Amino acid sequence: MTTCSSFGPSAESAPCSPETSSATAWRAAVAAAEVARDLHAHEETAALLGSALAAMGDDPSSTAHDRYDVLMARADAYRWSGRWVELTADIRSAIDAARTVGDAELVLRAATSGAQGALWQTTYHGEVDETLVAALREGLAALPTEPSALRCRATVALAGELYYAEPLAVRRALVDEALAMADKLGDPALRVEVMQISAVAVWTSATAHERVHLAEESARIAAEIGRDRDTVLSLTLAAVAHAEAGRPDRMRELAEEAMSEAQRLRLVYAELVLSGLIMPWLAMGGRTQECEQMLERVQRLHQQASIPQSEQAMMGAVFVYAVWNGSAPDVVEPLMAMARNDPLPMAPIVGALLCRVDRVDDAREYVRTHPVDLDHDDWFSMLAWCNAAELSMYLQDPVLAADVLALIAPFAGHSCSGGSGNAAGPVDTYIAFAHVALGDTAAASVHADRAMALCEQWEIPLAAQRLRDQRDQFGF
Image (cartoon, rainbow, N blue to C red; front, top):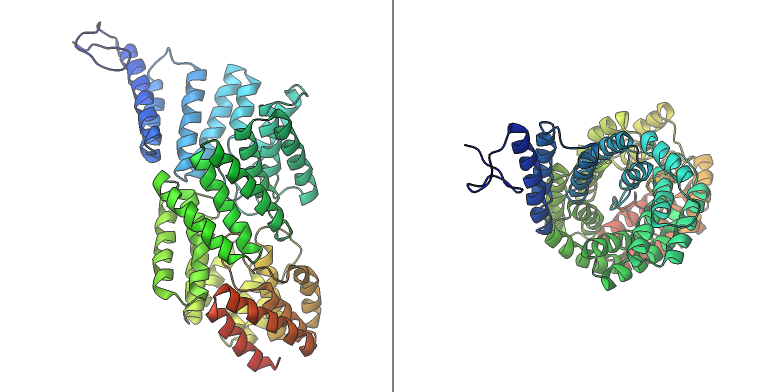
């Protein structure tokens, strides 16, 4: 005879019906998942919670609220295992369950959870999750106007979800409101979370120093209150921002600390971002063996994760490796194939690579049919802008040069990169290129000298050598 207890079959328990057995099964799976969670076994936790959800379907006593709780727990497991696509699906299902319950607060709690723990934007480039945006707006409108942790989280989550829908000024207003609310409420864990999401929500080239402050302050607080995972996330965000701001020494220091903890805590997302961050610097540094090992790690982590834009990050790592190890001609066609279906503004990157491999006429034809778009300002923009400057030099295009120089000139001393990856030397190099296209070789020489000094300081000799070759070719 089948018997049951509150945690599973037991020889000393009362007989149980199929319905009781199902109820026992899903509750036992939830209990086992809690044990796995405490061991940082995120994939195992998600699998156990999946079993719980399946068993719930055979338990008429399970409620929509029960389903909501398990979905939110599984979304959390997906968060730490880097399964953002699955996390988003669970959040949407949790929102549906919360609406069945008729609890607007539960809806809002689910809608806010998508931004938590994210190190990049939560959607693919240029996309907006209208379902989450609508849930956040509806929930905020229904909440009391007084400051609360839920209002604070919803406000900053909305800023993040609107990354591709609203200009920086709109997102900054939401971020400032959430930061002020978190400070007023005085909850250190809330402050950490809000600062992390804020850093991603305001991500542009111009906010690198601001993001350094947000990330380092959140790392400090997280460490003080013993939030190990949050410490890793904040250190990762800080390392990325330091790299963009032209401080690779600090980047390397923070990245090493974060990587060690990310591996201990099995945080796939953080490992992926950190590996993609470090790899181009190893490549430019001529550290080929270490670069190859890091590339293998990026590819392995990409296979484990399901994060919007991780495919681009993995492909970007492959292209970076090829460009710096002398195999650039081998990746031209794959890059062009990727650009055909990618929403990223890839035209200047493809064009510049064609020029570097002595296919200038092909580059000219490519940008004729794929016009260079400079009218964007997001995490990827600096890489596109700098490549446009290089392209203007090869194509002798002063109009393009003038347009792009206005965009990159304020960032002398910074690193050219596409967010957390694809670092490609000092922005000063590309400022020099734009001046060459404008016919001002004296100004180009000044900026190139500064770039050479930064290459030495940053320990990236291959970037310095490429600049030397281009200076010889174009006479500056």
